[in-house]
Length: 291
Image (tube, rainbow, N blue to C red; front, side):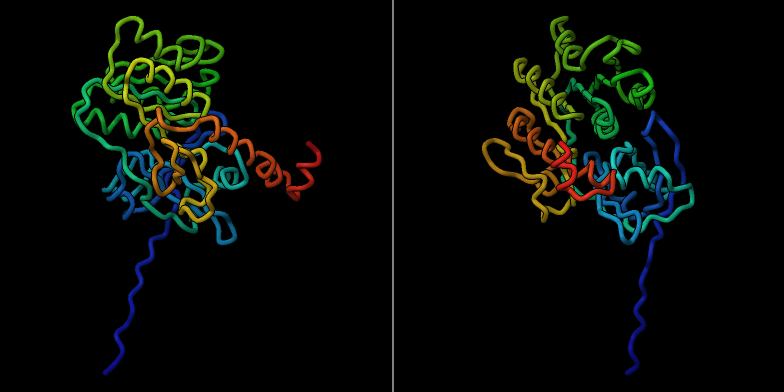
């Protein structure tokens, strides 16, 4: 009997569109039809740009099943994100794997507040969009260092009933932190049944302190500590409710009132010398000694 031919379907993940949203922050639409059909808020993909490159996780910001595309927003902070920023429209990406991670639990909460800081506004957007589509009343609080670093304000305005901006220098919205903006809203009588906070670890910790005092259930996304996205490297270990969890396979979202943010911050600081090594093309020991 003749052997049956094996048919392998290969999807070429090409960059369909890219635009700069803020300094060193780029929005991409990438051809990935299977992922586009299946992705849900809160999930991420693993990207490998070139055959010799590393895998790194990126949040799925949006998708268009008809076009067969997914939307990613990437901040240039290291070697791989820097390489991606230099790739032109039409360039092929070696691998895009996903959707991965546990989706956000979208249900009828009532009044919700979504608090995003910096690049954390990117993963906040699909969650806010999903909550609004489920019939919730959603308020957004967006933070950045300056006006030019503030992203997705228009898009958040399309899915939120209200959007408040807060910047470190006061160049957009109120001057100060998003946690202070939330605290002031609560003092003025705002009530929320559910909160989401995504951004730098100190920002998520500060927001959770506010919501815990107010008795508002809160989830956070621990994307910042993910490395290989499979749980094998152990780099995303985090203590939640006194138990060790892995952000990539158990999350990336967790109860913010149960996260050990101090331990999380310490873990992130430990990666800093290695990131500097990669950027400078040095051995880890040389940077550590220089410090």
